Image: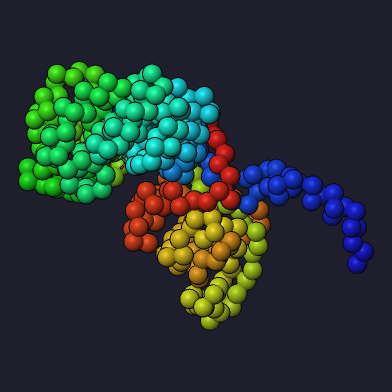
Length: 399
Ligand SMILES: *Cc1c(COP(=O)(O)O)cnc(C)c1O
């Protein structure tokens, strides 16, 4: 057979200089619905205590959804502020032109980084008097108040002042001339647990500790300070948790971390994970599939190879446990998930062809798979599933 090399060379021009396919949807990709993010934010915001602000948490590249895109639609939906984990995440949002207050939730502990934070008008989370004094010196040097949030530890044992220490130091902090305390906050450790509304639950104990520390410093004397403690679970739980602001991550992306909820809100998952079938083969009974032959056919069947694998962020722990949606039907994934590909058993369905799209996460009509389903099957949590998707998967905006 004659092969026309000239033609092959030309058709490979679909690769750009960086080796990225110009049509990002050819192999595997993530579709993000901006309007779902916007609707989720506005629905949650409507359910908040009157006057309560909404901080959209867009750390870890917007839980894998693309932080810039998520921020844009969250702000359209009525978000007042943004929360990021790192200095760099905050800088990236500022560079994209975002002007609203941005809180860095992680700890920034050295002077140079605090200066960078200040210069980009990002608010650091402060957990020690030492860091507070560093901020005061920076503000003084540049003749402008350093806006920041103070964190208190009510039971997470991660960041934050110890409670008595906080009460002792508060007068010194609030009298720092070049520091503007914009917020005081804490973080729940177990608000997604079923008992979170029970009076003696860990969540209620944390809430009471937070209230008590605010009372001890006479926080009412400082109306410009926003007090906040609620993540998504606590936000959905009850208005009692809202204080002056809520910090919502997971639910803004369309998922409810808790079944206990006073607010009856419908959320729309904003993410669809898709790939395509790259190859179809028939196998006989008793044939091993993929590494280690962890699946052996019990009858003659057909397999479809799907172009997505653990290097894209699909945990190998899910091997042999999930189903994918193709042509409005579920098909079981079989054999070990490999780095770049996985197999599904398409039985003897004749209508599935090479090139057909496959849905891994999200819904198609009545069929749906959520990150919670995957989390349960891989001893993980929805948060980890979502932010596990790698950059090899292009994020494509839909609607
Ligand atoms: C990630 C994070 C949140 C958001 O949590 P969700 O459960 O995703 O709503 C809120 N506050 C802090 C401090 C966080 O780190």
